[in-house]
Length: 189
Image 1 (cartoon, rainbow, N blue to C red):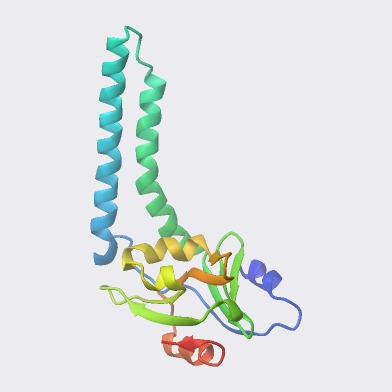
Image 2: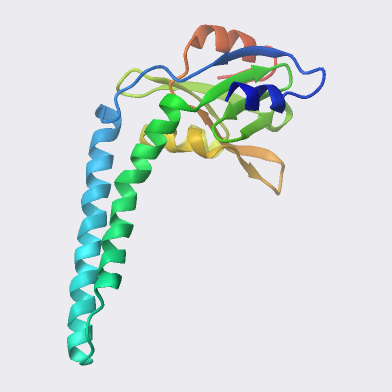
């Protein structure tokens, strides 16, 4: 990850700060209900699809395919797996960086947003006390339960006006230092 960050820096660009998300519990207060509800919903949908498929197969007098039923449950399994993957990536892969030109998140590649595309940034705290940096209208208006996913998914730009719609650095360390650095380049609200 460090090498990806170094390769992402443009010639003459100065790295002012870098850090990794602070340690956190995967099933903390902010996320526990959402993860459990989404997992239950996914498996209920898989059960409904299985029953509907079997009934339809009987009605049409064809043999139900075990492979298709397996696919329903495999899709349902993807819901908790994606939550696990986001947590794993945040804990082991993510590096946040701030330069004199932009903010960068490195996961499997470097994703960044230049300051000229960010009218303002804000810092919000979830109910577990994790402070996250939010940029763009969509991120600033999102629920804390969406911040983890947003931080690993990268930058969302509005192509019509060339502004950042969503960029999140989840659970950042050294919040005061980050605020001080960013206040020189972008409005901090």
